[in-house]
Amino acid sequence: MNAPLHTSALFRPSHRIASIGVSEILKISGLAAEMKRQGRDIIVLGAGEPDFDTPDPIKDAAERAIRAGVTKYTALDGGQELKAAIRAKFKRDNELEFAQDEITVSAGAKQVLFNAMMATINPGDEVIIPTPFWVTYADIVAIVGGTPVLVPCSEANGFRLQGNVLERAITPRTRWLMLNSPSNPSGAAYSETDYRPILDVLIKHPHVWLMVDDIYEHIIYDDFRFVTPAAIEPALRSRILTVNGVSKAYAMTGWRIGYGAGPSPLIRAMAVVQSQSTSCPSSVSQAAAIEALNGPQDFIRDRCSSFQQRRDLVVGALNAIDGIRCRAPEGAFYTFASCAGLIGKVTPDGQTLRSDTDFAEYLLRAAGVAVIPGSAFGLAPYFRISYATSAVELEDACQRIARATAGLS
Ligand code: PMP
Image (cartoon, rainbow, N blue to C red; front, side):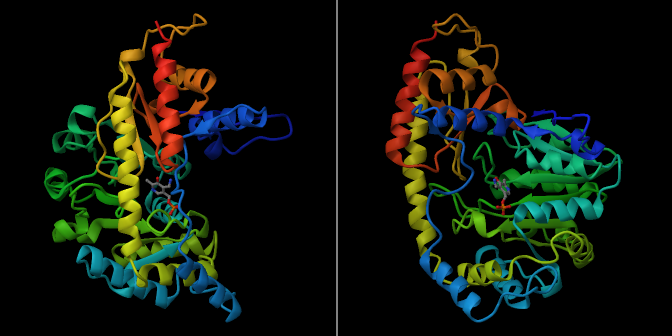
C-alpha cells in the first residue's frame, strides 16, 4: 500500500520506518498538486477534513486563553477541565460514565492510537484490522513492531466485519481488534445489531482488546443511530479503548486535540508514552476543545445536512455512470465506489486499465479529478471520493468522471 522511503549513502531510515514508507494517498495528491502548479484545472477530492471553518465561539475561547496566559505546559495527558468536558460529552452523547483517570487527551486521535499501540504492543503481537481501513492503523501497528492482520470486508456485507470472519482471524497472539464507525474510507457505520456478533466473539476471547475509532460519530445521515461498543456491552468495558476527537465534528483538524476513554491502567501507560514524545497537548487548543465540547452543538446538525446533500449528489451521479457502483454510506464524508466494471477497458490513448490505481491516474490526467484508489485502503478495485468540498465542485467533478468514463472502450 505504501511506496518505500528514499535511501541514500547519506541517509538511512531506521528499519522501523523503512518498512512503512510513504502513503499511496500522498502519491496521487502529490501528482495532483504538481499538475495544479503547472496551471491545470484540477479538482481534488482527497481531503480528509471538513471544508467548514472552526466556529467563532471556539476561536474566541482560544483567543481568551492566550490573553489569560494559558500558554504553559499542562498536565501530561490533558488538563482537568478538558477531561471533565470529555466525561460530560460521553454522558450526554453515549450514556457512558467514565472516571477522570479513565480519560486521556493527545494531539489528535492519531496520537491517542499511537500511544495505545506503543504502550501495549510487543514484537509479533497481532492487531486485526478490517479492510478497507484508514492506512494509519496498519502503519502505527507496524511502527511499534506489531503485525497488522488485514481482514477483508466485502461490499456485500456493507464493508462491515462479520463475527465468524473475526473468529477465524483471532490467534493467541492477537492483542487488539480495531474498528472504525462511521468508517474512513467506506462511510459504513455499525448499528447495535451489526456490533452484536463481534462483541459476542470478543467476550469469548478475553485476551483480545477492542479499539474503536468514533471520530466521525457526529457525521451521520438519514435516521442512522450512532452507537459505541462500550455503551452496548458493559462486560467488555475493561478492555475497550474508545477513541474520539474534535477534528471532524467541530472542523478543528489543525488544532490537534483527540481523546481516548478506557481502563485506567491502559490510560496511565499511554500517558507515559506521551510524556516522552509531546509532553502534553497544546494548552490553547485544549481551551478551544473545552468550548467545542461544552458549547452549543446544534450547528453540527446543520453541517451534517449539508454533507448529506452532497453525499446524495455524489452517490446519485456515480451510480448513473456505466461501470461504477456506489453504496450510500451511513456517515463520514467519503464514498467508496466500485470501479470493477471498468477494469480491462482501454483509454483513448490505448492504455488498458488494470487496477483502481490505473483508473485513478486516468481520471487525474484525462478529467483533472483526483480520487484515491481503494488499494490505498486495502480493498480493490474501488476509489474513494471525499465530498468535503462545495456542491458546485462536486457536480463538476462527477460530470468530468462521467465524460472520462464514457471515453473508455
Ligand atoms: N481516525 C480516522 C478514521 C480518520 O480518518 C482521521 C483523520 N483522517 C483520524 C482518526 C485522525 O483524527 P485526528 O485529527 O484527531 O488525529
